[in-house]
Image 1 (cartoon, rainbow, N blue to C red):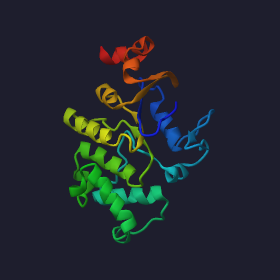
Image 2: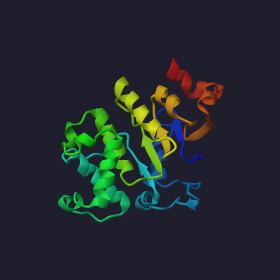
Image 3: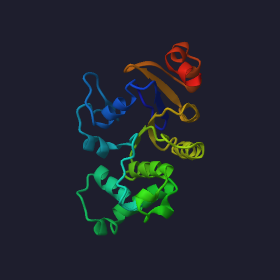
Length: 225
């Protein structure tokens, strides 16, 4: 699988196909048994998660990775510190550090949560939790976003807002998107790879994937029936 700068590359497939495992390996949380992972011309196959984060790779999770008792802004600051390689700072210090607070607030504004910065995170809606997690990923200004089911559990209106937001990032960020919402995938993706049993059976433009007979038999036929 190769990712092109500025594109949204979706990975789809049935449960157990290896989609989240792929993201975990790209993020450095799991190591592959074979093969190589190249990023910006460098072999990062055996590099740890923090090293990849410092090089510009950030990810979101199927289950939100949010500290619910913290204010919204402090979740973003925590993520920004970790991804930028800063040592832990007490919040009263971090919240006065412009090198942290300004990108954190900008990330919240990008996901339409700027006005909720001081609210306790547990009081956000499910969709807002997803927006917050993306703000946490954006705070360190990554070049590659690994998005693991960002629309999981969302209603139609929340999903539509997320599609609009991710569309606004096209060309600015490179994104690898794992998502079960096929309407969202085909609306967003520049290219799609289909995984079945850990193997990529097809990669192509959305129309090519939709009309691929092998893909329809292996996956899309079940989704559309």
